[in-house]
Length: 291
Image (cartoon, rainbow, N blue to C red; front, side):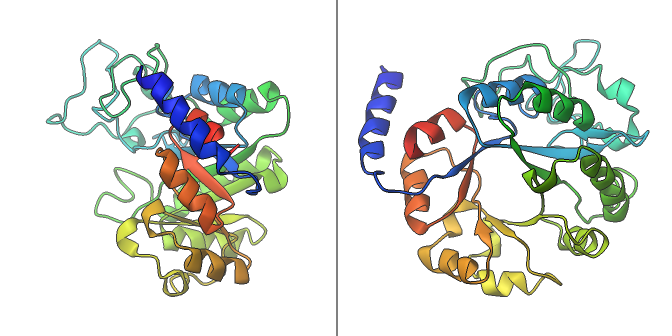
């Protein structure tokens, strides 16, 4: 009954969308509400749904491999150790940057029920290498797909030991991404302004997206002063998006891609604000709402 009610609501909401521009549908971590996050099966499912853009995150292993993972450690939300034991909140964090990839690949990240996403399909799956994931999606996609890929660098006392420093992070990830020859289908996003400024200086043709939190506020003109350049995209937490800050971005040739939007009413509010793209854990709902 809940499923029927949801799609009835979507039908009504969608009827209000006549004449609206096409929205770039971006599957957050491949659509984490539907499939194990940041995995190849998630990306395959997102492509089957018809998303425009795959959104995912990068970390580094101890042996310098680029791993697809939101967290820089094995999160108790989803991770199971090779011996079958569950990682718990109270356990010491097991950081990816302290482990070679062949050890990382022995952990399961798809079998545990996830309270945050109760409808997520369960399966045995591991954190993939970025290279393997992109090679798969490039061969599987029926039409060219875009990528919105986050460099998960962050300052803190563990930087350089528990996770890589931002220059090492960028110097390892960006050459790999560029080697895939994705052209303008590649966007690199980041919260870390140090990394954004460094990437722009070293790879000036790279398309960059400035991620900001809700607590950063919606004064986009002030936020942009944190950077040494004007990025092609601003990616704020959705609640701070207004018609006014979207209009400011467009006046300065900046696209707007809010995150992470799972409510149909909020999706339509953002469309009315004039955004070009929306990131969602539920790309199926986003597609039904905006298309």
